[in-house]
Image (cartoon, rainbow, N blue to C red; front, side, top):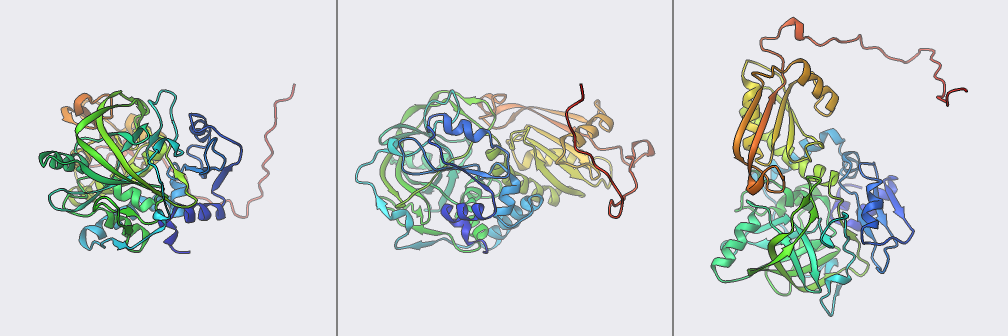
Length: 462
């Protein structure tokens, strides 16, 4: 099998199952808190989870597609450490030679059109204990620029309010915010489709940073690069915003330009709750679905760290390599929510470049709050190794850079109104290198051919 399975959640489930990377929960599970609570016991593991018997529902629920880079790498036929480079390659290819989506006459998502619109009947989970309600948190928005007609893809959180009403949080600076402003200026609502149960290429296309994907370009072309073929869409009934042909559910919606609704709380990428506040109001006009749909959701936390972090890493790595000599790799740490903390690995060629890398990283990905730069003998994926560099190589007087009152990410509670302070750590050794900072090493040896007795570990004797 090549990569054709990536466009269809059903094929993805079959692929995971064949690799032994799918846990099936066959017992009946309540979608209100219990489902997410059980899923949390498998978080960061090498398998996704399929809930086959959801109380009061006919459709199963898939969760965990993004909570392990090992799993994601296996699904995408790429070693996990090479995933950021793969993401970078696909985005660069799209920027130079984009592949346009193909609009089909029909597709699986239109197998059934519900007679009545009632979002409350769909298997949408309540995730965290203080969430304000059920949330779509892995569904992709497709809309068009009201002026230019260019498509935009994004993932926002949508709270289910009633049968035909959703409330949406729109991150500041996203293209969806710009499009809504344009629609409001025309005295119009913004039509869009909400696509549920989609492959990872769509997720990556939707999460591409604005610095890498300008508003004048159709981001769905990024998904074409991941899937190895043009994205397939089908027309909507009510607007020119198409649906993903192989999505499990397709909701035709309007984002109202003249009304808001209370939304939240919701457990966000920060591991904290986003506040209850007035936000965008959405009316659901039509629901399409597969004959046997599968709901897809993500668990707030590691799944977001990986899916968004890979995009951020790729963008920062691309830009840093252009601007700072010696930059080798970038990792968005899970302790930094996959969004706010980065570690940069550099081969020093002259003094000062490590600090330049800090400045460039903040410019390349504005949500970052902290950036740590280390030498090329430090494993940026190992927090113990990074801490070692900070405690043995960093000069606290010269190596800590504080930047005050800078734009950041509004979901981070330390950035109220998107404004806060950032910090950079130069944890590299002095340049030119001095012998007292040289790292001790052991002779590389193989265990092949050695007679070794390894006992089992048992309980202590009384």
